[in-house]
Length: 173
Image 1 (spheres, rainbow, N blue to C red):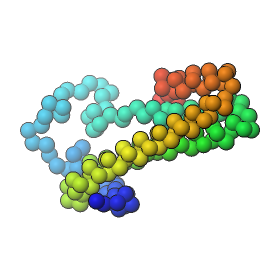
Image 2: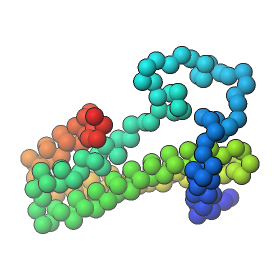
Image 3: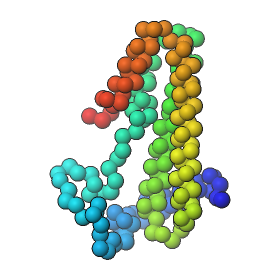
Image 4: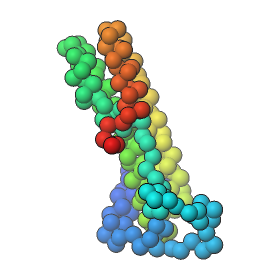
């Protein structure tokens, strides 16, 4: 099995190669003969499916964007601040894991099938998902410790803002 370091190097090389040569078309220059139901549907104005997969909403990225202002609004004590810092770092790590997964998938889409094996693709996907799951589990652990240290009013505000970050994410308007 190829180790994670080698997969990262392969992904980086693929990404650099794709940027250097440019994408010929949505499918890396290959035509899709015969098409399929998903690629043959009509698209309406503003439909991002004409350029590939629409960007997905990442709840951890939305929470990550909310945390700087939440930190200020919670008026954390000296004892609570390091707990919040730890939680914030772990949320950032989890959001970064999702961004890395998206970069890996983009590099695979740009590859013309000559340099990457199926084992590498599936192994990278599995590793990316495992990394995201582990970092999210750690974020939950750190949030649990932080939450226990918050006063009842701070908890209410924390809960409200986390939910708000999902309903009305910052930076999306």
